[in-house]
Image (cartoon, rainbow, N blue to C red):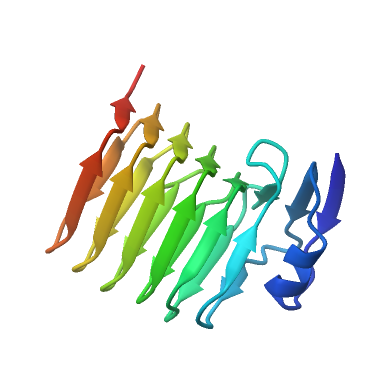
Length: 168
């Protein structure tokens, strides 16, 4: 497995170099931050293309951005896997797992579409949504998130189709 150490430059440049079995690792509590519209992050395979937060930071933070797509990627070992604020994000065929707090945090008038994705083994919630945020979930699994699969508060809406939720 190849390890790519994250240094602060455009995520687009990092994605250009991702190959099967690559890992993007964080240094010095850094977070991959996206604050521009229309960015797509494509991994080759959700089981082998991994973005790790090294257990000490939010792995990916998306702020004030529209049309962000995350495909075929594993996001793991952060305090929060993906944090979304004032943004619209599409997560397809991915894994969000083993994060210390929540796998996905969607707040402040944000939208997330989760499709064919596994949100498993996060130490808190699988998905936290609040402050008028919306989530559409289809053909996905939320398993073994001890604080619950999904939390929805403060005017948030969730639609769930063809998905599995369990705490085994």
